[in-house]
Length: 340
Image (cartoon, rainbow, N blue to C red; front, side, top):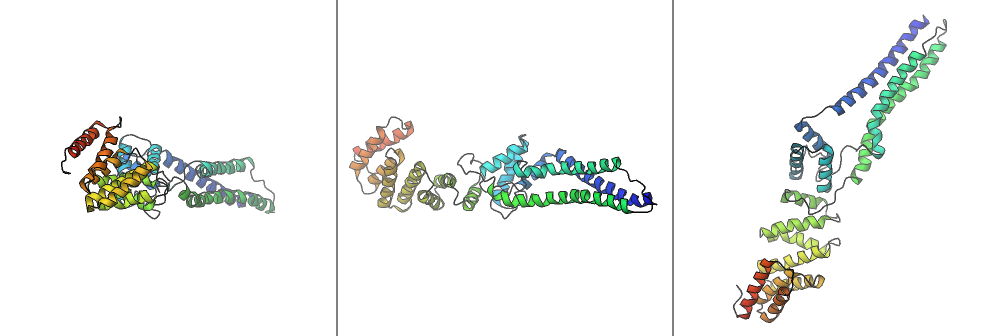
């Protein structure tokens, strides 16, 4: 009777251990399964947090920035790049993009090893049971109860361990996610990024130490399109930024000066901005050339304008096309022609 009474305990042990083995096997199978291209795109998109959304992956976000990022994922998947390479490119190209699932490194490596440990625990329980069969101790159930008590902690530990893995995943994501994967903003590889996307990234990272490069790149787009109204706030922000380098500030001041003249005919304001740029970089060809243009076309100060153009022509490294423009303007001024 004692042996018969012990069978439910043994059965429950085997069932619980079997469930652990099955769960771990399913997880391994899912990880090892090769996805189609569409599956890979969705999988990668589900791993990356949208930089301008509230904890939403780019695969599910309707934001323009998220759509641009998903287009990049599709393109890279079609090119045959690995998931890791695509994720790295996303994190490097979009500030604020972070992994929604923790990578298999550091403390988060536990999350990936845990299923293997759970599998090992289940197997160990079965092996232990087979090596320690229940002995008939007579009518007293004390031995069976003692054995059940010894087995119970192992089963509870295995189940608790699996639960802890899930909880730890969410915990580590919340604790480390915002601090990791924040990409540096650069003005590289922005040709395929829309203006709307760049605006969204800038708005979400106004205090990022390298946001000025993207600001300047976006302002240059607007400037080339003669959209001075959209370009102005970005150029102005670069000038005011404590993180902008001298070259960026000189470019922004020069553009602001020319927009002041071209857009509003404010010669004095334009000349002041050009002077600020020249104070920072006395060799700025563009600042000196545009200042000469405004001096000639505005107050008619041809003498100072000529001197600036002569200085520009004296530089051996200026572009040939620029040299021709400057030489033509200098000749026009010397001939007494009016500003065109």
